[in-house]
Image (cartoon, rainbow, N blue to C red; front, side):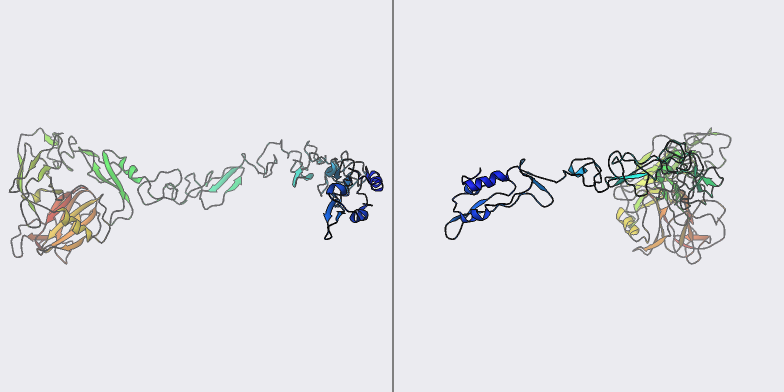
Length: 550
């Protein structure tokens, strides 16, 4: 929109079509002329900017000079009405326009760098031919692979040849890896897949010491292993290939001790329940059978063979551990009894009482501990009396007694006649005094005494110094009637002899009387069966030294 004023129009026409911003010859005149709108000031020239009509304080409009639109370093194209980058020339004179200006010269400051130039392998990684895929053709060893030292920078990264050793024709990406301490295939690894990685293996269990330093070898060496991870390289039974057993050790080197050991313990023959536990007085945890299958029994307490005997048909252990003690050697075992034998009767009778005050207990259920058929159960009368009869003579009879509100109890023959039950509250009060945590998966033995010490031993006849039964150390609880209650907790289930000792002279054979000065009329020991679902409760009177033995 050239202005109608003739001399301004002429100046505008002369400015049209030039490649750089023209001088605004009418600027000063525009500033003096009165104007009423921006259109009157517009000279229709792109490169000198847009003129505007501004009103002065005197109320007269004056045309103001426009601001050139193109920044420094660029040129103004009036014909196209746009700013250009100024790439119309070849700065280094090599005949190629810079990439920034739409050309293909990747370095317009260096005439030696342009498309078509010869690419060379140089330490500065210059891309002479402006093609990042070419890095030169140096192949000193003639193996057809370009030296990895020949590179080009491209987008901030180095692109190089692939021959990691251009002095050896047998080293390149296509070469097979051999065991020679060299990266033959140029993959950044040495002897992979062809060398042995060895760990020291002092215990020869095929697992190397996890603390040892592995190394590569082209030959296997004795005293070493192909895998590591052995957390104890001095013991062949400890390594990642083992399963944890019950021993207090991390057998499989997984950082845990005895995990899953209870399942391991239950896997033995005839075992229904077993636990991995550290019994008092023993050096390490071990498997302990806590319940056998209904007709099976654990006589040797060897966890490896579980509940090894069937007391219903095993002649050696017919009816109980040890069976009839050789009296049935020429017979056979049938339903837990020695056969053939003449019919006979056996009887267990007495009274069930509350230990606290000797009150009779009505409705107590009394049954023989081990039965091969349906159990025979009798219920105590209002007087507490019970009577249980068998039509054969078993080797040993042990009774299980239970009643509502009382603790189930197992008694041997020495306890027959007067079975004394503890209330549930009595037992809990006694256990609350335990100096060690009580593991209810194990047995409990309670001995009430007037004047005696007590220990637990294996029931070995004729040998006083029989091995003690593992348990936590016993502790004493005073009773209101003057007796002392000695409590053993965490006792290994199985047969045990509860023995009396004279106070202050432990491990000496003694006699026991029901009361001080009385005759030797009380048991000095009880052969008991420790179970996890019932306690053993026995009573001793006043005991003193009598003899050594038994």
